[in-house]
Image 1: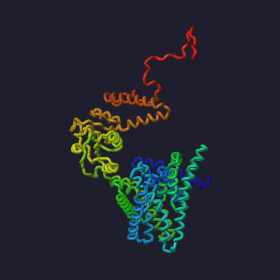
Image 2 (image 1 turned 90 degrees about the vertical axis):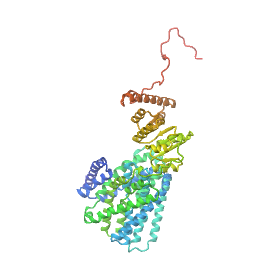
Image 3 (image 1 turned 180 degrees about the vertical axis):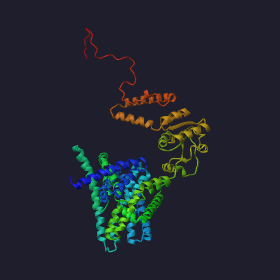
Image 4 (image 1 turned 30 degrees about the vertical axis):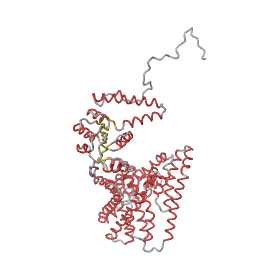
Length: 605
């Protein structure tokens, strides 16, 4: 093994060791794996100087961001992407332009830079980190939430904005002449590359994977998946766009492919390790000398950058109709500078827009802001209001019907469909203003009110209701409402949503008229349909489910008397040997018993 190979092997081993220790540790203490990777990189690089080539590793590790965007693209069908167009081209555009303008003004007024340099700095810092933002969303499982989708839309527009921002650099260079022809050429190349990728995705990718899948070569499928991701990314990079955007477009083109899940499984291991390496490389790239020489500037610039961007993002989200909580979450997720700022600042320094020392300072500011992102996201959580902090008028005009439903989350929404379809009128009250606004858009008649208050129940018509359906999703709230109704309205019939088995027993002990575990029926149906798919007949699967339901009820009756551990013999923990669910009325006879001597076979006819 030559010296270079030995060094590469050793560095890889050190990075893997750092990731193995730091990521689980930071996850355990609640700071997230991203901060763990960053910290490991800072310790290995700038502090201990074990690895010094952080920039080289960073360029390679950016493939993790590319693979991440490909996987996200696989989850977004073109129709879903079209639904996000308002957030992408509306919210995203406003965020970039207003952030750039505010940062330009701050840089020009207090940074002592020329208008040209301030313009490039403003646009470069207006971009946020795709890698950090999406990784945090994935860790929290929030990528498909409202704030997750809006955050992703902003990041996607920022990727699209890289081309015009890079095209802006030669325009503001002091010695630059007319570049109109080259700009038109760049735009033509960009449009042509996107068109080529869309055509290839539409007509070539599916046949390619179909052909390779037909050979049964698993390794070839993995190689083809990586080839598609890196090939599409390289095509976009040649056109002046980011590799991540090219990979994302390829993913979207394959979102409706029958090979989507296999591609995701093939790419996921590479994505995970390379993205972790990217965060470590950011830590490795910190130049402590630049930070030490400009410590005062950095201490001022980093919080100013993050505060300006957070305020702009919050305001833009509010303008586009987001709630306070959603806007705060997005503002706390995307206030940092982004990895594409490195590219823009390097290009500007090479073109002479500002000095190389300024570029190094900007890179340090961006890197530190990225490192503070997990903490900013945690801070945003503390600034959020609880749902009950937002008040609405308790107007119960027209309330009062056969059924009073308290709580209108998913469980209540489904139950209401049965009641309304059966011709029963339902008065619905809920304490979430956001849920009320959302339900009202679909035509539901729903009232704002706290179901734990007697005056609210009276105003909502509990005295006229034949049944009170308590559909709240928190066990303690459900119990509080049930206790209140039984104390103040003893004749009311109560149907309650139970959280789990223990809650079911508690509600039965309270004497409610009917309770339903929120997942029991769906689990029963799911199990029955799975059994049918394994070859069991529909009738037999139904009989089995009825038997499981009977045993469950018997077990509940025993647990109500003897405690939660009673009735374990009623619980299936091993496969049951198939036998008739209903015993035959008479014993069967052997078909192979010996014939009597005088027995003769009759003619089948």
